[in-house]
Image (cartoon, rainbow over all chains, first blue to last red; front, side, top):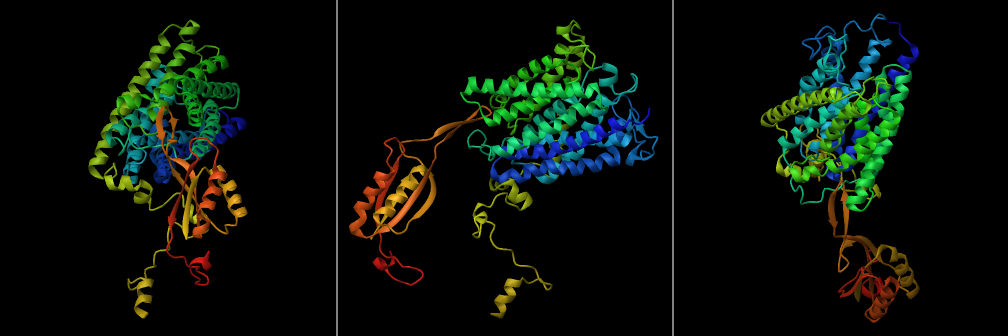
Length: 443
Length: 112
């Protein structure tokens, strides 16, 4: 097909929008942890941008979107993005490299989402090892299975089973949520969990992050149309409708159960709605999106309390928001899907029977089990070898200080007085003695 | 000399400061503090997790005065800080042995 300038512009702009979601996630998560862990929390998101970009250019794109091996993974034919500079390298109506850039941003944010489950207590090297391993073993094959379409001979989920996952309810959110549950179990509870206060240290940061995520999500969903036309417009409006309704849904539940509507609930409701509409934004009408969003907000508001009853410390509710929201949004296609929408499937409420619902359920079941199992084993292996859980003393001191040798906020220093950061350490001289000790000797 | 320490509601600080100035107290030290007495704290909810927040924000005002002024200064602070509601705070008096003005080395009464 010919390259279309409008489509290419939209896909490239969408790639940039989705890129911004990961720093947005860093703020969203960073605000929710205590002051002693905010830098590590934000860095777990940011380092994922660096690590996954390298992986993607070297082998990731090829393993996900070049050819097909057994309907579960690509091949090595486009390793190093080989051959994609040529003007003939076209994917749909855009240069293949535009698609490479767009899909890269999805591969980045998916593992970054998992980090919310292991706040305050993971070694930085353990996290990097996990991101490399999980992205290679889980994300690439799952994204291939869901999104590599080749006239019925592509990935088994999208092309053979025909489960619908427009922008990543299964491939991104349920996938990350299942891995998050595994890591929360492997790393165990934080010291003092359910006993010490672990309140969010900065709700304004959380709200900033939620705003950036919401903004970037238009690229995530409407960009997944891979063209600048009706499908992009439909998914854009559905994304907004569902997210707005989910904010209201979450706040209603909070108001009834706990007596107050909170800003954390508002931000969380927005993200829950965005997650739920991700797989379904091409499958429902705007009214369907409102219903779906309202339900998703209410369901996730309830789901985040489950961890206290089940006893796993999914610190920032990756399971309650992404696993539950992604699963619900995906299953909702089997209920609220209509052939009038771009994904063109009728759900149960539109006379399509339970066929589509069954496909959605099977896809999510397999992806969820696979991601959980691999993440569990990978997490255990990393913990036994290079170490994944921080030592007890280090966790009490704070992961920012022991893993990064930094402090996020220096309130005493901010007033212009000498702050908690203290004075510069004496510089090393050539013969190994320090400046201070030399001065001391002279005096 | 006496050290008078008052822990009061933050929004009454300006009233206390103005009243002390009117009375003739020439300096004070103010610190942000947190604590509780009979007032106790409140409950906060984050994604369904309830936290009992026991410590309430307060300000601590410290002034050092001559023995003879002590009772009057306490009276001035109490009047200025009072709202009549629970959580108004406390004022207490402790004896002070020595005061030195850092700039001049003046002692005790001269240093006030």
